Length: 105
Image 1 (spheres, rainbow, N blue to C red):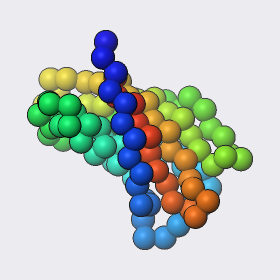
Image 2 (cartoon, one colour; image 1 turned 45 degrees about the vertical axis):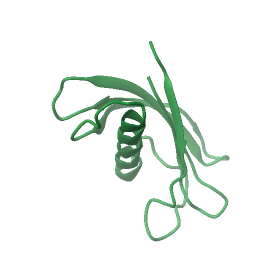
Image 3 (tube, helix red, strand yellow; image 1 turned 135 degrees about the vertical axis):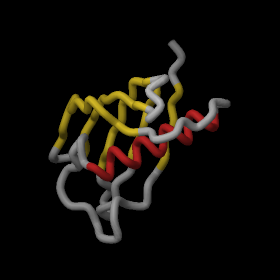
Image 4 (cartoon, rainbow, N blue to C red; image 1 turned 60 degrees about the vertical axis):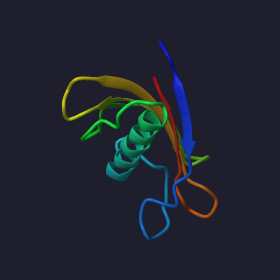
């Protein structure tokens, strides 16, 4: 099995700062994770699948003191032809912005 690791810093989930610890199933975290995964696939020579979405989300660890969640999920395309396992970490920075580190397997 080939693992593609990719990290992308996101400017934030919305126009305002993020408070608390992001949830693995947060709608915006899932959307951004799917978007990042599509970019990873495209940069590694694959056609960018249409309609990517994150499903079967599992919280592996939540650290409220560090304000981050470690998550696992399945990445599905709307065509249903291929699914990928993903892991992502969603921490909050000191200036209340969220970034996502994603590993696509």
